Image (cartoon, rainbow, N blue to C red; front, side, top):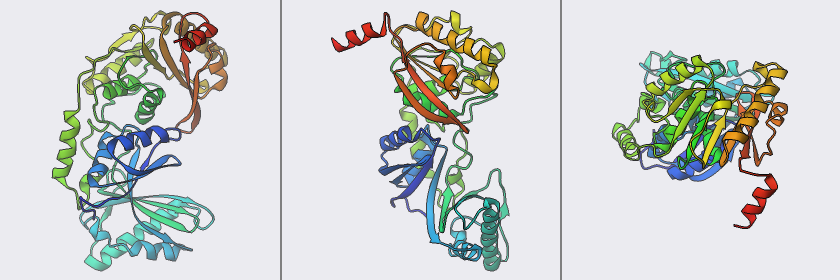
Length: 392
């Protein structure tokens, strides 16, 4: 399939709004010809970089390898195009596979139909060639095939990740409306925090944001807790190369040199967060408290605070106004010298924070368009702060 020395195109999927930080991550790994696209970043790399992308990228959802492109006009041409590939080079008749399809345009309008047609073409090729056929496994297949059709253009890609990379493997349990691990890491990276100052999540819920923060501070690879990636079932899996990637990443891991504080007023949330932190073996690196934000004293500044408070779907308007107003009061009183970031899909609620935002970034939490807003917290008035900054 892919010789270890060959360079090829790789496409990494992510959430809308996280393309810039994903591109930065890929650049750090050594990716070439990096090109941010809609909810993804494309680049050129070798097999080692493919393995590293799956193991180390924090804002990656899936790492895909394009293997063929065709122009097609109808279902017969789709079937013929799929059959042009020698599928036995990618997986064996005794292995399993699955097909995911995304379609756009007027030629093909039903992704499920495209999925079935692709499966038929692959199965028929095996049966005609070997007298037997591989089985379908939609949950944990040995090979996952992605079909993207836009208009007349058919792209065929292989999924090297297996399960979505947001499934880190450390979450024992979740509280209400948990934030996705990839989004949590993306927010931290968007804030500019690199483990070089103290960190607080005053509404930690299941603990995802502080766990991702510790992983960044300690250089723990994003895939450290996983036991499987899709590429491990490929015919050309290079075990020694994978062990090299695993070993080199492990050598970069270090102790946490800053204070990381997680807190929530819900006892249930704190219990869940504690279990998740223990599963990730970072419970000794995070100070976890059951406290309302109004009485929480953060570690000394400078520092970063990131919060994912409830959105409008989970609270009445009156309660929402009170919650966001209380967040603003606590930030003003207790977080002087910090930069605080809040993510919310409720633009009106954010106005009740009562602080002047210094940055606004649009990101998506699932289908919800959100604002990720930064507030610089300083003593005195905003005018005094601007004067002090200009005279430094």
